[in-house]
Image (cartoon, rainbow, N blue to C red; front, side, top):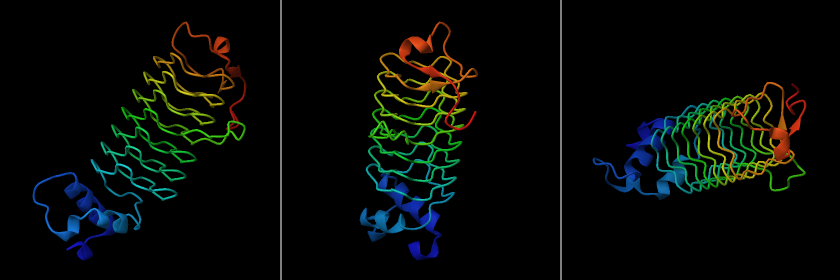
Length: 216
C-alpha cells in the first residue's frame, strides 16, 4: 500500500498509525519503516500530530512542513531547514535545534523546555536562526539559547525563565509580557525598537544596546 502513496503521505500514515489510532495494522506500521520513509523529502509535508519522539532529522530540508501538535521530544533537528514551518503547539522539549533555520516559523504555544538551540561555544555566536519567528506563549524555560538570532521575532508572553540567553540577538524583537526570571542575558543585544515588559531594564541585566547582528 505504501508504494502507491507519495513520500509525504506515506510518512504521515506511518506516524498516524504509530500514534495508536485504529484502522492501522500489519508490517506497514512497524517503527523501522519510519526511518525508511523519513529518508524521503519532507518539504511541505503534512505531519500534523506526528509521533516523532527521538527521531533523527539532522540537516533535513523540511521547509514549509506542517508539524502542528507533533511530538518531537528529544528529536535531533540540528541544522535542519525549518523555514516557514508550522510548529504550533508542537512538543520540542529537549530537542536539539542547534544551527537550525526557523525563519518565519510558527512556534506559537510550542514547548521548547530544555531544548538546545544555542551554540555550545558561546564565542562562536552561531545559534539557531529564528528571525521573524512567531513564538507567542512559547515555553523556553531552561532552554539553551546561546547566540540564537531572535531578530524581529514575536516573543510576546513567552516563558524564558532560567534560559541561557547569553549572546542572543533580540534586535527589533517583541518581548512584551515575556517571562525572563532567572534568564542569563549578559552579552545579548537589543535595539531601540526591541520591546520589553514595562519596567524591565535590559542594561541592568547585562544586555547591550546597538545594531543587530542582522544589520539593523
